Length: 92
Image 1 (cartoon, helix red, strand yellow):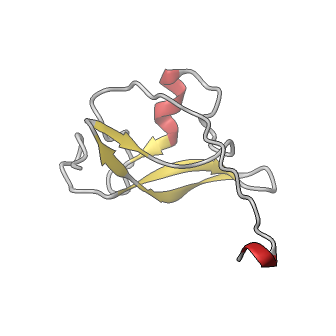
Image 2 (image 1 turned 90 degrees about the horizontal axis):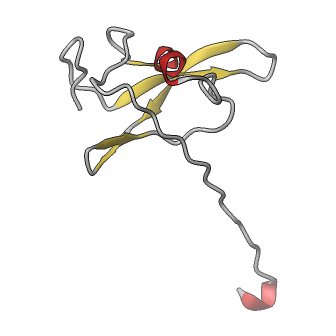
């Protein structure tokens, strides 16, 4: 995708995340493009979790110009639950 601000081609975004010690910093996350959307997989340590749309855009930035890289400011969050089950040795 191209950043709307700097025009550079990017395949990652910087996402502001809380660290375990309570501080926060930006980490690089790969993006996936699908059906006119950009998807990033993260967790509830994202500093934008439970913030307003206006506040959320400050937590997602282009790795080059450090600005929100899309024209649309709408962000949809969904919670994904992954179940992992273990087989016994006789099932292997």
